[in-house]
Every structure is written in structure tokens, then in C-alpha cells.
Image (cartoon, rainbow, N blue to C red; front, top):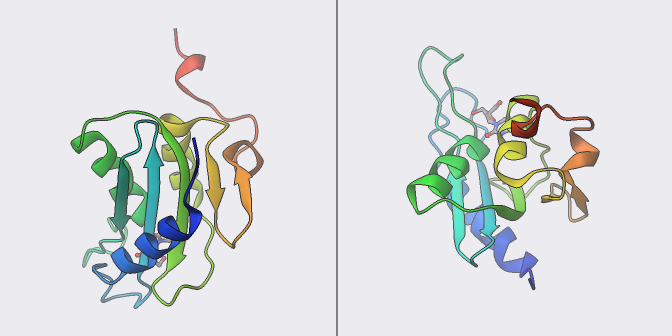
Length: 128
Ligand code: THU
């Protein structure tokens, strides 16, 4: 599949404008392309309890399922100002579930398979 990385980056920065990040003032956006061509996005949503805050990638995974599921092929994550950010450990694990080792992840203009960010991942295939 041809991946329009520029469109994904625009969508990631755009959706970060909808982030609810009053505590960190650190808006994040994520945009991904699904194996059927759909574009899915997510932004971080914080909570007064702080520890319950949801990352942008978490919202994207929910949007993926809510809009019909499928496999994630490529994802771009950006700060609201377009700056670079790498997915936290929890989000790497969430992304592994829906994209696997071959999911292409752009955090800084380069594209790396998720296997580089989360080597030897525990995943669905490890369960009976
Ligand atoms: N955040 C994300 O949205 N994705 C990440 O992968 C790392 C961190 C958010 C969570 C919190 O709302 C803010 O960035 C500061 O940690």
C-alpha cells in the first residue's frame, strides 16, 4: 500500500488541537492508516487523577475498533506544535496488538518498524 506520510503527519498535528491536556499542557496527536485505507486518529485525554490520562495512541486504537477494526499499517505521532515524540511503553504494547512487528512508526520523520521500538514483544500469538 502507498502511504501518504505527509497526510498522516498533517492529521496527527491537526488532531492534537483537540487534545484535552490541561495538566501537562502537552498535546499529542496520532494518525494511522488501516489495511483497508481508512485513516484513524487519536489525541491525548487527561484526567484530574493524572494517572488515568489516556495517550493519543490509545485514542487511535479505540477509533480503529470503533470504526470497523482492521490492521494498522503505519502511524505518525506528533506533539501539537509538530515536534517529535516517541510512544510510551504502554502505547507500544497497544500498537503491537493492532499492527504487530511490521507496523511502521514515524516519530521523527524516520519510519521504523514497531519491532525496533518494542523488540521481542509479547503478543496475541503468545497466548494459547
Ligand atoms: N502522551 C501521549 O499521548 N502519547 C505518548 O506516547 C506519550 C505521552 C501524553 C500523555 C500525557 O497526556 C502527555 O502526553 C504528557 O505525558
